[in-house]
Image (cartoon, rainbow, N blue to C red; front, side):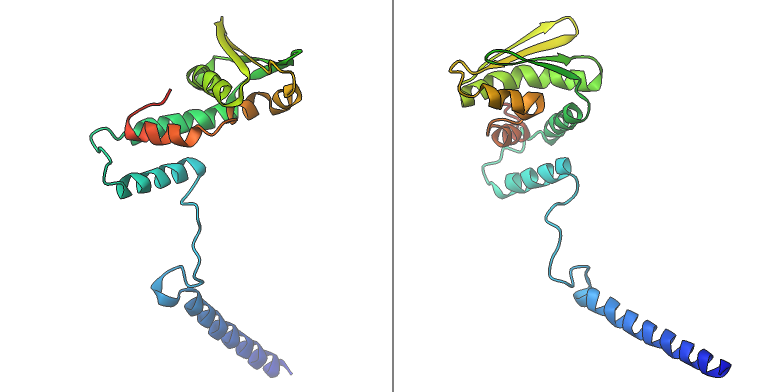
Amino acid sequence: IRMWKIIGGMAAGLTALTLGGALWAQHNAGGSHGGHGTIPTEPGDAGFAAITEIVEILREDPATDWSRVDIDGLREHLVDMHTLVEGAVVVASATEQGLLMRVSTTGRAGEAASRMVPAHGPVMAGETGWRSSVTLEGEEILWHVEDPTGAEVAQIQALGFFGLMATGDHHRPHHMALARGVPLH
């Protein structure tokens, strides 16, 4: 009985090795990791993916002025965006017509907010029809966003700081302009 267990175990082991080798060969068909015919659509994290996409666009555009291209500037802005989302300290208060946000300007996230909020506020207002005012008071940015019609007050309040920072369709053109060395803001 003991001998049969050993033989049975060896047979199972050989079967596993054979199947494992066959599966490995199938997975690596054609000498690449793409044996299944699919590859990831993202080349890394979101910032790296954005840079990758923009580099591809610039390389495909024969009108690209390579003497002006500023991928490092784009990267700095993408880092600001990430830092703002990860670390901004914001205290928001509902107003009758919208929202008042107090954004700390201290630390790396505060520095990012200092660069981004004053530029974003007026552009967002132009796209939405809302009123946006940004002022600096001590170590805080005061950002008021209000709907003069009163129809979208609940939306403004629900979006809050981060939703309002993401509002509008100017981010992609802004990133292309930064990469081309021609800032929009």
